[in-house]
Length: 275
Length: 275
Image (cartoon, rainbow over all chains, first blue to last red; front, side):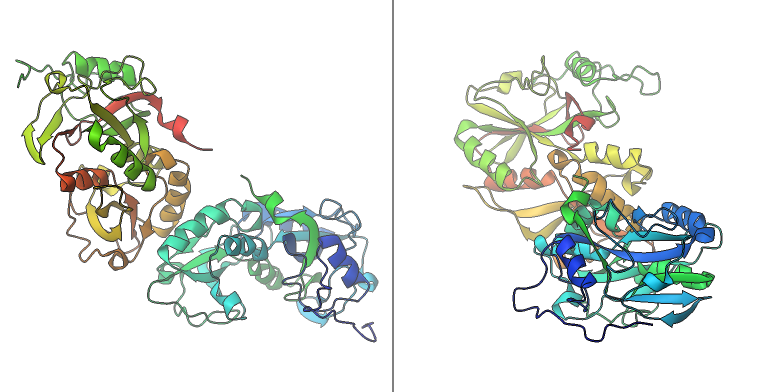
């Protein structure tokens, strides 16, 4: 698998960070940006990526439509088409992410920076909303997000809440957790309700035991986050849900984004606010 | 003080309950309805009433504007005017409530069913939103409200949160509490956010100790409400706040509605939804 001989990483402090979704994709495509996309093109929607064979596509699409909170569909490609014009005129899914994961029969077989050679005529792209968008809105309102303050990964938990199955796709809802004061929790419900296309309102708050979380300091994914005495855990449906559901199915072939290396689009977060 | 010789009470089960705000006020004015207004004219906004001398009116109005969550102003009368045309063409505040309380220097001196003889040229009417409106929206969404299920009064608490003072008006925020599951609490934030003119979103949830409530089963007003193991207390700013604030000031003269005997208006709850 071709890895670039050298990946020029733009110095994030130099002011040369691409500031639009299009500029970000072009920098990635030209191998001028290789790192995680957090902080890239501020204000632009970033998405989770899943690419599946046509034989699974309609079941997976139905799964997303049945489970819109963990699987908010931003766009679905036509079979074999590597473009997603509603998310970017020039978008080419084969080259526009920093890094991918390629799976065969549930096993990871490659972590390329380009999937041109893996492309097939029956592949269908699924771009799903991600928490970056609503976190941006929360921070703009002055709400502190602990994992961002700490530079850690948001804690995520498999819950006792089952997703609604479709075809072979089924499994538990995975949630991310952000500790907030009650007043900030109420404000966060209001703010994230405005963004149904990027996970929307929390699914739960307080009382983690009610959704099958035994030890809040032992997340299933990500890093633990300190909850202060005046805070409660607030839980949002998480984009790891479809990833874990797809992994369970062990599809014959599948490509996803590499963790932290999201699809950067031309759509602005604010466009996805319903009011 | 003139009490009606006989008050004809409409049988609530006969189907003769006035179904519009106007019909309700007319039935009250004609002494055909003397009971509490809960359940009367479903869908129409009911309000808390405070009538103050002109000398206090501008400070009280400022207090309401500084504290919109506990004191959501529906309408303010002109000095000496007993009408509130924005809430009802034919509304006459002197006759249109079932019962009033009249205070002199903070002491209750009368509980009349008509305040015509108490009227003064300097009196200013304040009509404030009440929780009936948002409770109607919550119940329409299928959310169970414990105090309504139990036929009891919602539990209310003086909190450690201070209102923003204006002139002589100051005092603690009073909140009402409804036990809800986390999922219903999130939904209730969404629904009541749509109604800022009738207390709006909760001010707090979970952790009553953070707002100075020592024993959730010992409310300062109303009846205790059972909180089940899968529920949390959700707190809304309460219209008892301005009543308790006014009582503290012991105004030379003041009239309020009698508990449960609200002002029924021609405005529909749905008109007050901001979206």
